[in-house]
Image 1 (cartoon, rainbow, N blue to C red):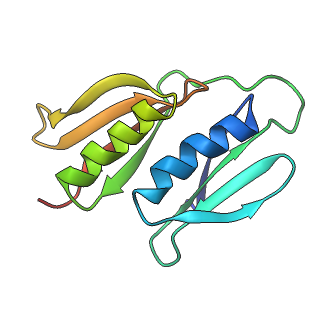
Image 2 (image 1 turned 90 degrees about the vertical axis):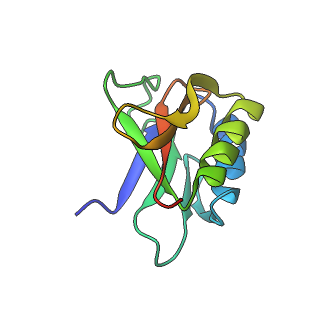
Length: 123
């Protein structure tokens, strides 16, 4: 069972601001913070998310083919998440829209280059 997803970051403050904006769209908030990491959760709503400065002291890098998906309650939330990502230093990897598989999805990268997407679970 997965209980947390974590992305490495080179700038904890910048990553914190970026993910504060995105998690606010989902009603989540910071649940823990240390000198090296920040965690967000929405109690009772599945797994948590974290960003961390790598513990080995080496620079954070992105994984090719690695992506985290946010389940959004509706298309409007997908739109807001993508907009929040763009407004807070993210880069577009595919704006909101219906994909070939029939899902309403948006894709972006965070300021460190980690790829994410949001998919509408509802209408």
